[in-house]
Length: 351
Ligand SMILES: Cc1cc2nc3c(=O)[nH]c(=O)nc-3n(C[C@H](O)[C@H](O)[C@H](O)COP(=O)(O)O)c2cc1C
Image 1 (cartoon, rainbow, N blue to C red):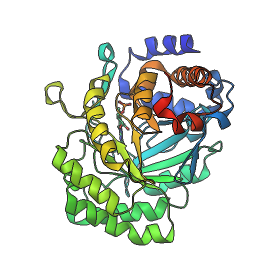
Image 2 (image 1 turned 120 degrees about the vertical axis):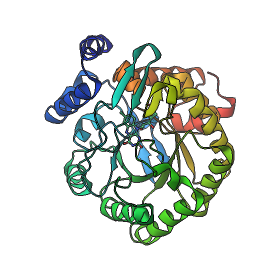
Image 3 (image 1 turned 180 degrees about the vertical axis):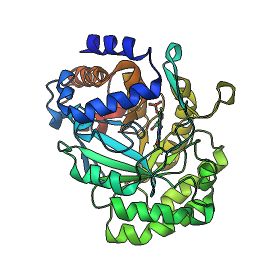
Image 4 (image 1 turned 90 degrees about the vertical axis):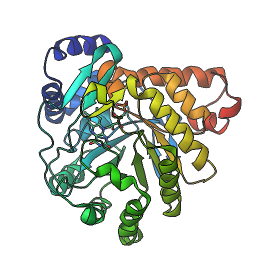
């Protein structure tokens, strides 16, 4: 159905990006069965990976920010995503930054956004997630502080959100890496991060769920090292790398897609080299992933899971079929039965 998406995109790209985003989400919310347009026969047991107690039945997830409020979970989980990440959610409703706040760079298959965590707030998003048909898929939530919450009270926001969502999601992500909430990236500093995770300790004991930290591609290596150490110290399940990058020459906000790819890869390599010896820690790769080569590179480096956002906008849902076909080809070539076997023997596997 890539031809259908091509037509949809040609028309949609004549309109304002945020209008199209909201229009599409409303459509997917109202008619989740639309997912059948792009669905393909798939024996998901072949692609299943067990990660920190969660079974991802396909190694590609939908990144945060697409379905901020969890309105179209039923649609996205019917596509062949292995997981869908809702959010970023803040404790209270937030309108986000001034419009316009989303821009396309079609020639570079990239986007720039300055959304600023526009979301309905914890209570309504909680109800959306709790009431959704998840089609047996993994659903995570990405949590962030309200814009008006001071640095001193930031840890409390994360605590409220962890406690609220831990009962209805499969994993949570602490987001301190969006460039669109003033001062948020300051929380990536070692002391603030520690404060956040100390605040989450009680909730994690009561209701243990895999917990990830989503990082920025714009940190220097010293900061990155500190961040990784904190993640290890607090027994996190892993790191999601990366969020969008600031390119001042392009304007405010964060860049995603192909323009982000190289920066994101550099950060991912740095992170992977430092966490691969920790058994329970995963690095979920996100940032400029648009071809199977990008996934293959992540696997060869020792990773398993990836997420996409911008390439999903440019290529449409059939990108998942493209990935599945490549996995099938490689399994055949290596005479292997499933993805788990491939990843266990990835060092010797042939592309
Ligand atoms: C419009 C837009 C909104 C986003 N909103 C969020 C968000 O709320 N929280 C978050 O953690 N990441 C957010 N992201 C970042 C994506 O989850 C992802 O990390 C980033 O776009 C890089 O992946 P990509 O190159 O595949 O798009 C957003 C990205 C875009 C384009």
